[in-house]
Image (cartoon, rainbow, N blue to C red; front, side):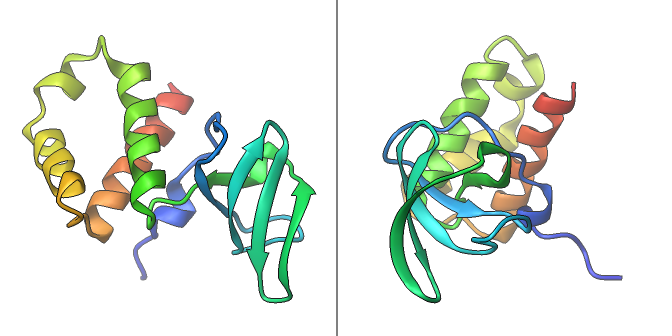
Length: 123
């Protein structure tokens, strides 16, 4: 059995302008990447070129493979969980933040962050 990737776990979270995004498995831009322009609009890069289009927020998420997208999701999670002892006292988060600052995050870090974001939205 193949373990799920962060793309299969990461939920759609509220996105701000300038956040690098990736489109989920649904919709016409499946797997494409882009940048948020404003609420409901994104600049999209896909196999046929690039365009600006309105988007469905439920099918787009921050691109955790991009350092800015990873940082955005991390800051969003911190804002949602700033009161959680598990977030503030878990040494894994300190290590993840340090690796992020040095551009050394890996698939395990992306998966851990995606799981935590999903856990907050499902709580």
